[in-house]
Image 1 (cartoon, helix red, strand yellow):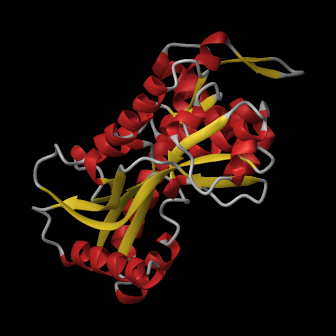
Image 2 (cartoon, rainbow, N blue to C red):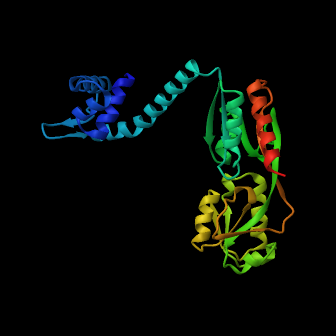
Length: 296
C-alpha cells in the first residue's frame, strides 16, 4: 500500500469522479483507475461501486475513508515537516499552550525569537490542561505555558513565573453585582454559577471552585470546558462565571469583578531541565523579558 494509492482513494471518495481526481492529482484517468484497482486488490475489498452513470463508495469504502483520511493527513504533515527540517532548519522546538488569552504576548515572543534564531523551526500546539501536561511529560513538547501547580509533581522540570493571577467573577454589565468593586463568595449564593470543568483545569483552580460550590450549596452549577464557552453561556444569561483573570478575554458586554479570595495562581513557562540546548534557554529568556516589558 503506497501513499499515492491512498491519495487517489481519498480524492475519489470526495469527488466520486475519476476524471476530476485525475485533474486534482495531475495524472491520467487510467492511472487513477490503476491505483484504485491495485489498492482494492491489496485489501481484498471493493471500495467503490462503479457504473457508467456514477461512482459511489461501498460500506467498506466509507469505513476505510473515515479512518484513512486522518492518517493520510498526518503522513503529509510529517513529510512536510521532515522536508522543512532538512532544507531550512537546523533544529526545532515544540511549544504547548492553553489559548490566546492567557498567552497574549506569544506573537511578540515568536517574532523576537525568529529574529534572533531564524534557523529554529517552531511548532505550536494548543491543548487543554490534561493533554498539554501529558504531551510534555512524555517529551512530545519541549516547552509549555502552564500554571505552576499543574507541573509541580513532574520530575526534572524547570519553571519561570511570568505573572500571578487571581480569581474573578465575569457577569453581564446589567447584573446587580456588576456595580461591586469586589465580590464576596457569600454574595454568590443562589446565583447560577459557571465554572471551568475540573477535569480540564489545574488542581488549584478546581480546589477554589469546589470551595465556592461548598459555600453556595443552593447555586445551580454549570461546567464549561473553556473560558470562551463560559462567555457564551454568560451572554446567554445562563449564569455568572468564576475563573482566573488571565483566561478572561476583554468583552464590552461583560464586567470582570475581583472575587474576595486570597488564592493566587502562578502562571509561567516550563521546560525539561535535562534539555541543555541553547534554543530552549533563548526562548525562556526572551519570554521572560517580553513579559517583564509588558507587565509592570
